[in-house]
Amino acid sequence: MSHPLTAGSETTVADNTRHRRRPRMLLAAGVAIVALAVLTGCINLNASQTTALNAMNHDRNVNHLATLPVQAQAQAKAQAWANNLAAKGYIYHSNLPTGYSSGWCSLGENVGRGGSVAQVETAYMKSPEHRANILDGRWAGVGVGVAVSANGTTFTVQEFYKGGGCTGS
Image 1 (spheres, rainbow, N blue to C red):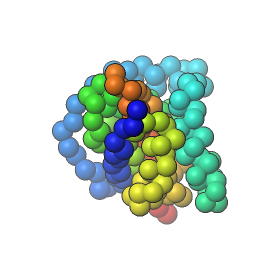
Image 2 (image 1 turned 90 degrees about the horizontal axis):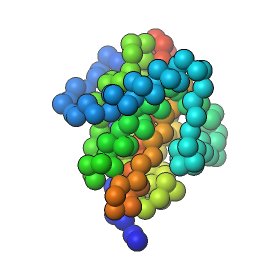
Image 3 (image 1 turned 120 degrees about the vertical axis):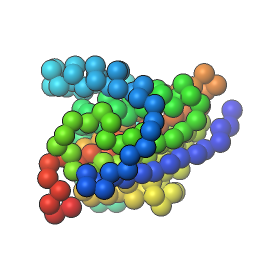
Image 4 (image 1 turned 90 degrees about the vertical axis):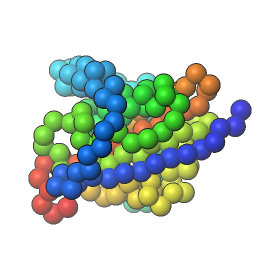
């Protein structure tokens, strides 16, 4: 089955935050996942999330950039948002700061849908805005969410994270 491929990209810096009203469904699941990850000190990814993370990091590596580690808050938000998008059946951006505690400097988000994780990653890399987020050297961590809707469409979310102060950004 072929699926239309669509995607969106957004970046926010702490002192230039865009505020929009968006459904806050992602927080309940996200907070629980973050709490568990922080308490246990580990983040376990399922096979689809691992595929998405490896594909994104492969694209960074072939462009001479470091692999991004999974960041707990970004991971919780990415998966919760992917679940939300798959449930609704269309893509749109989250309110980037929602789900993060204070202490972040920059955040970025890619959202997309298609027939598979690989198809969406390929589309991200063909889009200047998505590619810029993936290949941005300032990121220190990432979260990857993958969810499949009832009709078989794959939704992916990449949440990019830079913590700490914004000096030298």
